[in-house]
Length: 223
Image 1 (spheres, rainbow, N blue to C red):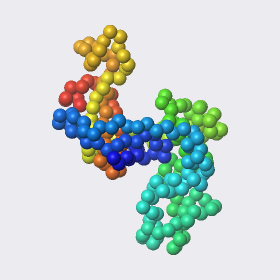
Image 2 (cartoon, rainbow, N blue to C red; image 1 turned 90 degrees about the horizontal axis):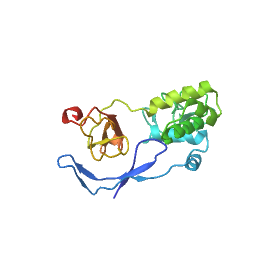
Image 3 (cartoon, one colour; image 1 turned 180 degrees about the horizontal axis):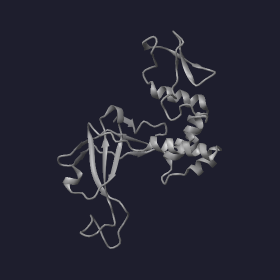
C-alpha cells in the first residue's frame, strides 16, 4: 500500500497509509492507523548541518519542478551564488532568492538557526517561550522574540476551507471523568467537544488537519 508523507514541513513526524472513508454509514475500509516516526535532534543535525543545506532544502521545496527564470521565461538550470543566499540562471545570470517572501527574508540570523527554532517550536508539545529560544540559539531576546512571532504565525492554522476527500469526527477532550463514562450528560461541562477534519485527496495539502473546539455536537453546530 502506498505511503505518503504527512504535511509539508521539513521535520515530518509521521506517515499514513491510504484508506477509504465513507461518511454515509461511517464505515472504515482498509483502515491503518498512522505510524509515528520519531524525528530527533540527531536527525535534524544530520539533515541540516549548515546554512547551505538549509537553503538548498528551501529551494527544492519552493521549486520542486525546477526554477523558472523570469528573464528567460522558462525553467532553466541554476547554480548557487557563493557570495549571497541566491541562485543564478546558467543562461542569463538572473538571480533567484529562495528566502524572498518568507519569514527568513532580509534576516541576518543564520538560516540554520531559523530551521532549528522551527524544529524546537514544532516538536514541543507544550510550546516554548521566546526566552527559551534566546537560550537555545544564543541570540538576543529581541531577535528571539521576532523569530518566535514569525514562526508562530507560520505554524498557526489558516482560514482556508478544507476540500476534496475529507474525514470528519468529533471527540470530547479532558481526560477520564471519575465515576462517569461515555459522552457528556446533561449539565456536564467538564469536557469540551472538539471537531476534527482531515483532508486526504487535495494535492496541495495532503494530510492537513483542522481541529476546532465547538459548543456542542448537534448537527446544526457541526454543519
